[in-house]
Length: 158
Image (cartoon, rainbow, N blue to C red):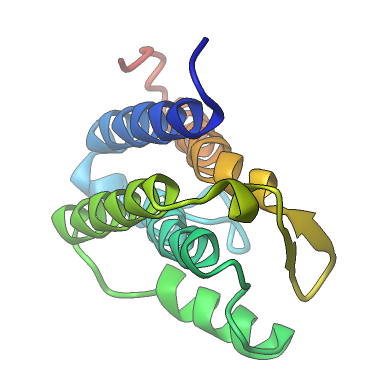
């Protein structure tokens, strides 16, 4: 049976691959389109996903949530989401941060896997953060799938 670390790595790799594939089918003229003024565009979703892959890598690596209050964290997230990036830049950042997640997972000790991480909202087991990169990326790929249906792209992109 595959170990927990290997399962988390495999899911992270596969979800990143699917995200990049889904995102690659967003037409250039739709990258910054959103269905409502308060809704996120595909580019904003991609920037968010890449940003959080880096956050998750840091949490897994250090066993600590980044030391900043909620307001500073929200401001950092908003700045990352609104960054003026190209499709290629955000994909490169997502891949770089995913590689950091994989390296952090590889470096985990059994003690660290059993540890708890204090977050601004709640304490969470390290296993939660080990599984989070794959699930988070999958969820945001699904958001982009939904946006594609808004402009009548009904294809399933694998």
